[in-house]
Length: 310
Ligand SMILES: [Zn+2]
Image (cartoon, rainbow, N blue to C red; front, side, top):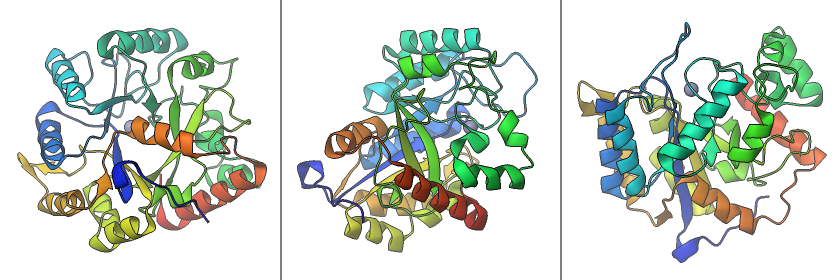
C-alpha cells in the first residue's frame, strides 16, 4: 500500500513532467511550452550544456545556442524548472563534466536540482545493470550480454568518466526506474529515497512512461487520468517533447485534448523538484530497505521485459 497524501491547497493529486531534451529544436519545443504554460502546467525541462565535439549518435539544441538559452531563462522566469541531462549528447570526461556543471550554475543561477542520465553517455551514474542489485542485476546482465555492465562508469572512481562526488555536490534528485502506470507514486511510494548501495546519488525518483507522443497520450488516457485523481497519486511523466508532439509547426491534437482535460482537474501542477521536496517532507523513511529495493527492482524488471519501459 502506498500512503494517502494530503496535497497542498486541497489539491487531489499531483502531476509533473520531466522533458528529456534529446532531438529538441527551439521552434517546435517553444510551441509545446507555450501550450503547457497556457494551461497552467509548470513542469521541468532538461538541458545539455554544450555542443558536442566528438562523434555522436544523438543530438539536439544545447545551451551554447544564445537564442535557446534566452528562451530557457524566460521559461525559468515563468516558473518552469530547468533540469540536467548530462553535459552534452555524447560521453564527457570528468573535467568536462565539472566545467559543464559550473556553467549550468552560472547560466541558471542555481544547481541542477534534478537530472536524468542520457542513455548514450558513458559517464551515466549507476546506469545499465548498475541500476539493479542481486539476482535482478544478474538477469539483466544475461539479457543484455553484459554490454551495459561495462559501459557506464560515472560511479566508478577509477574511471576517467567518474563524477560521483560532483553528482553528490551539485544534483539533489536523479531518476532511476520508469513504470507504465500513470501513478508513479503508487509504483514507488518511497520516493524521493536514498539507497545506501548508491552513495553518490543524494535522492532517487521514479517516473511514468511517456517517451514519445503516442506513449505519452496513452499513459494520459481519460481512464488513467481519472485513476490518478481517484487514487490521489502523483505522476512524474518522463517524455521527449521532440518526439512527435509537434509536426509541421502544429501540436498533436490528441496531446492538446489530453492535457486540456487534465488541466481542468484539481491537480497540483508544479515542477519536479517542488513535488519531490514536498514528498521528502511527507516521507518518514527516506532510506530504502533491502526488501523495498528488491520489490522496486522486480517491478521495474517485469515492466521492462513485458512492456519495454525505460
Ligand atoms: Zn536522452
